Amino acid sequence: MPKRQKMAKRLHVLRAKSNNKILILQQMKKIVKKHPLAIRWFHWINFPVLAIMIWSGLLIYWANDIYRLGWGNTTVLKFFPDSFNKALNIPFRLAEGMSLHFVFMWLFAINGFVYVAYLFFSGEWKLIFPNKKALKESWQVILHDLHIINNLPPQKKYNAAQRIAYTGVILMGFGSIVTGIAIYKPVQFKTICALLGGYEWARIEHFTLTILFALFFVLHIVQVVLAGWNNFRGIVAGFEVVTVTPLPPNVNEIIEDQDQ
Amino acid sequence: MGNNNEKIVSSKEIRNKTLLAFAIFFLLIIGALFGWRWINNQPQDNGIPTPLRAVLNGNENLFSNYIYSPDNSSKAYSPADAVPRVRVNGDAGLGDDFDAAAWKLQVVRKPGDTLFLSLDEIKALPKTEVIFDFKCIEGWSQITHWSGVKFSDFVNKYQLTNQSTMNYVGLNTPDKKYYVGIDTRSILHPQTLLCYEMNGKPLPMNQGYPLRLIIPVKYGIKHLKRIGTIFFSNTKPKDYWYERGYDYYSGL
Image (cartoon, rainbow over all chains, first blue to last red; front, side, top):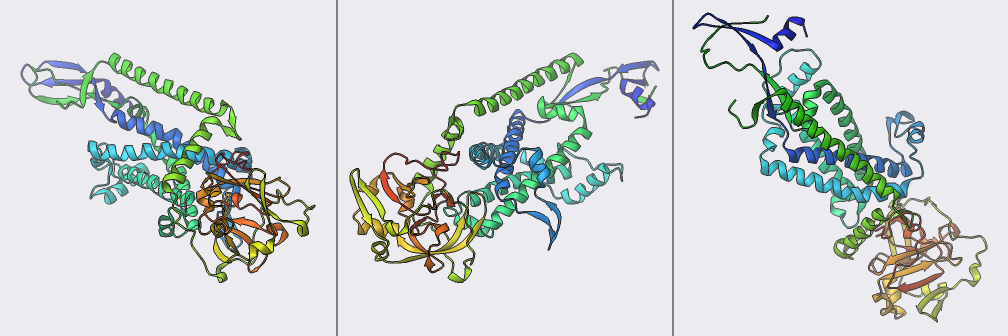
């Protein structure tokens, strides 16, 4: 930020028309409510629970770790390299992984369903679900975040790219539950299992969704770090702080608004 | 402005609100970490911490009493779908000192009243084929082809209907080194077999010759190879993998 602009953040010099007097006004801070308490709870319950689901999922997956990216005999990426398993002490913990997975699945599913119900009943869904302009605007958001263009389209709580990402992650959670049910009880829920392409496909889909969650997590953390403290405070304390310059009542017209 | 979602406040108030929120946030983090430690430090119940075991038992109760239906069967395949080379995944209970000629199936009707049956007597019952996707708890599966006697036919033939009103059936290998417990509902499922053939031939030794259990509504760990003894019980019979931290029910 240039020095001139920094100064302007602290002081504005306003000249009023009525008496030609120069008024020096200090800027004031305003708190703007951002995330309702309920959403903050859902978010911070989900974080450790999803982490445990992914961790226990790794312990389970290890027992039959057959997936890879590649073709024929060429493997670009093995899920997962031995060094990865070794570093995280994953091998031979299938029973532990299953016990955690089939306990914490309840918290993951319940928290997720209550969250979605809350979105509907509170009207928060209007701020999260993509609107008509979402596709076009999300492209502008991406170009903006990559510093290719300067201006963002006007937004409410979330920009178009966030709307798509956050709605996508809800769908991913739903997908994880459905594919998970298909693997967990493939005989009792054989219709779900068949619709997903059968038992082995359901396992591949469940795994792929987990990888997508991990990628979402990385992107989310990068964006949170870039967005800074005020934004992070929003998901903990619920509000953001915005700086404003209120006008005294005797000033009815600003002739000049000049940084000093 | 004038919106009740916005309010002008002093820097001090912002600081206090922020500090309060983060204090609560950190307390919750510490609480979660302690909760995690508490779970893992609880006494073990068959290989996993007691609270986890309690939830798994709750899952069993839910799935066996409310979700399980004998009408839900594992998808049936044709013999051509079955793999020629069937994976062998364990040899617990299959000791080398097994005397095949002397083998008889022992069915404990009640304590002190055991029925001894030869393979030929079992084969005399109607033969049922099951070709299904065998699912290992490790996560792999294979379409495999088995034949034998439906457990429910066996129960009817040998008048074990009273015994089969009990909650569980226990099975042991002849050397008692492998053992499973199965809820009676699942063992009476129409696809559950006392199986003596694989791919149309007598079971190989490593698949549990002369008689094994095939129970498609369960993971492979419950498909005990080489049945020595069958008994009925209202309490959970000993289970090899349950003792090693796995879910007792292990139903699909």
